[in-house]
Length: 236
Picture 1 (tube, one colour):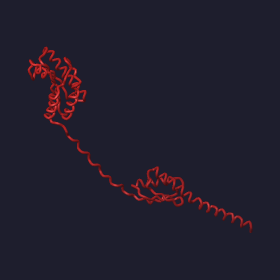
Picture 2 (cartoon, helix red, strand yellow; picture 1 turned 135 degrees about the vertical axis):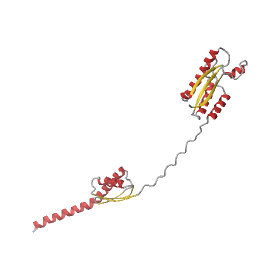
Picture 3 (cartoon, rainbow, N blue to C red; picture 1 turned 30 degrees about the vertical axis):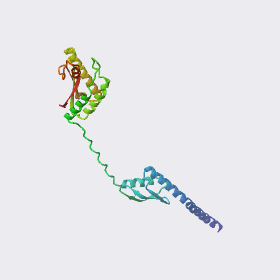
Picture 4 (cartoon, one colour; picture 1 turned 90 degrees about the vertical axis):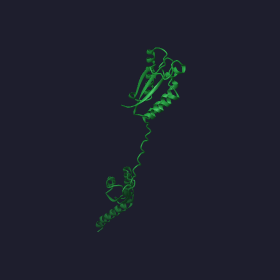
């Protein structure tokens, strides 16, 4: 009789111990599964999904953007070690409508007509002449700001070409005057190109003493004849 009771009592004790272990460890296991499931969802970018645990089953709830994201979130939790099942109570919500950005304002067209541009250049040259070192084609530094202003004005009429005309007074030989007028026109062209004007928009022509605008017999007349003119034309 005693031999029969002893194994039965031992079996009952073992079952009781197992139940106690499960009862004690159950909350710990649930807490661990919940913590690791939440971490996995955060890493995957699904912070908004809520996690609840019962035993080894995870229930997901909360809002998610689409079916594909729902599947991904469920798959992430299913891959957590120790999870035996995932209940999906996630709700799909459409993302808020995003207003289309307002169209950018059309760029302001501040281009000038050919005549307006010619008038602007003429006004600049009337206020200040392009100066050179004596008997030289080297542009005086005092004229650099004037040339910069001319390039800025020409930038507002991109469809025109510029002919730079070099002129001299009648002092000296015709050949020398022709040579120096061409050299000075070339210097102005090079300077404008250096200020980012396209080379194909600018040509230089030396006229020597052939086109006076004042009396070469007077000092002031000779000074007026030594000049650079800019003639604008429409691009061919």
